[in-house]
Image (tube, rainbow, N blue to C red; front, side):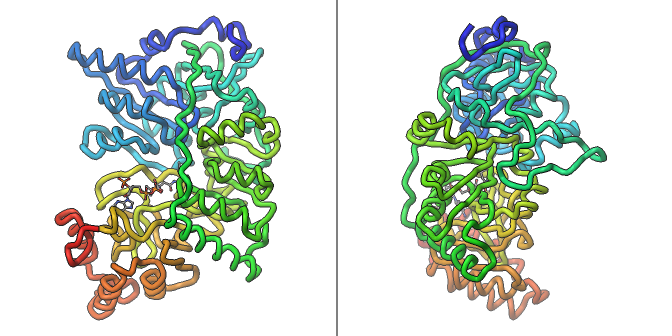
Length: 508
Ligand code: 0RQ
């Protein structure tokens, strides 16, 4: 028995991954742990992919429904997508192989708000959950499960699945024990009660996941690390975007709409988010808190410097060097960091009550402030909506950030009309590019368009956007939200046809 499996009866169920996957019947719906590359099972997915590949060679194709918390890693999504072993994937992915299969029409994908997944599964909207495959960082003497570096939907998987395979990962820090808050008080209507979180790190549950021993069909041991991408320092564009966001927040403080403590921060992952977080460390802000999905490097640094007092999330997404620092000092983070199930970390009720300041990346925005976070040219999925919708609609201020161009300047991320809508104009308060910031609060559509074109568009595309808007003012069917419908998506079609949105045909 390893030291991580402290319960004898669980230890008796240890098998190799290859043996465990034989217990998953073809066609099963499988709920796996994992959120932004943290806490996904490391051994079972690869073994399952191998089984699928071997079965295919025998002429017996085999597919599984694959449900997770959010994105995972090449060893999970990539491996199973590569052998075409996935039937329906949900709810968020960012794996290139998976993305390719979805966009080629070879795999089904349903992209839903992260906070909605648990209730949809409880409703039975995706059918039965047959098997859960969940990474934990240990099993206690009395058989409770110590969660790992993400919680995601694990509580729901363990409750809903008929059978459970546990992966016990001794690479994960032992100090994770006690850092989680698993709330068992959710119910379907009409039995719902308020979620009693009034401050980001209010504890309302228990540090452990529960799973009856009888459900556990196998335990697999591993020492493999999470997929931790190396931290790349913010580039100049991200820093300029971050600068505008920080100026905006400072202005909100100066005008008395926010205090120096701001309100609980939610921040998407990536370069811009890290640049904003870095800037918060040197700004006039203090005693900050976060109620978010993911704790990334920038947030850990803010905690280390003391600017960020507390952070609630559902997962870590740290670089290897940040993980080292975290593991060295994990004990001291216990009263400052807390990981929850994603239905709680992203819960609209809590986000609205706390008044989160939400900041997320986008694919494109239109001149009226509608946002596309997910689709390229209206039809190709990039990643998914993730938690951006959970936060944006319910935030105190919802901020969306993007460079003003993509693909070397061939694409304007500010367009006449978005080619797909994830966040409607009603959910969008502030749009920011490296060119500037448009505060849309309180503005009519026409005033919004003027601001977005003037402040956010790249100078190479600004005249064409202004020209579109001016002509729409002349001949639109209605003048509340002026549009030229036969032209509104022509920028996207030009990119598809000519590889550029530029009217002069220049590529980049
Ligand atoms: O593609 O690498 O092939 O060139 O999209 O774009 O600029 O690297 O930006 O990594 O911050 O991702 C919206 C995808 C932005 C992300 C999105 C191309 C661009 C590049 C990526 P290449 P960048 P980022 C918290 C909240 C939704 C979920 C969310 C996202 C690639 O922020 O998934 O907010 N958000 N979750 O070239 C064509 C455009 C484009 C474009 C960018 N207008 N047209 N291609 N690209 N803009 C996290 C979770 O919920 C878990």
